[in-house]
Length: 72
Image 1 (tube, rainbow, N blue to C red):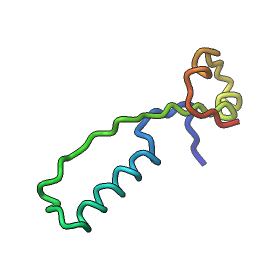
Image 2: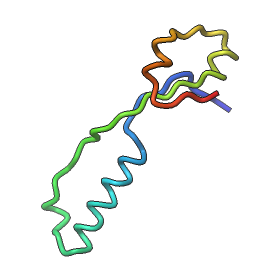
Image 3: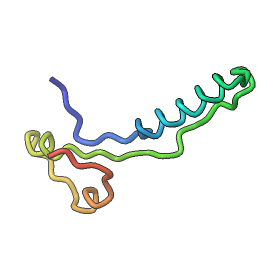
């Protein structure tokens, strides 16, 4: 199994909410071709402390303060 120490990307829950909003508009009769393409607006930083320890990597305490989620 491969595990990352740090990952940064679009928020999955936020992306799902945006998809639900677009689906709702389509079901209410909006033309899908006329809906705007949207870029993510919320990003998450996730730090995997367990993997960092296993690899012997020392991470800055400031990184943990900025992380949205820390995997123990």
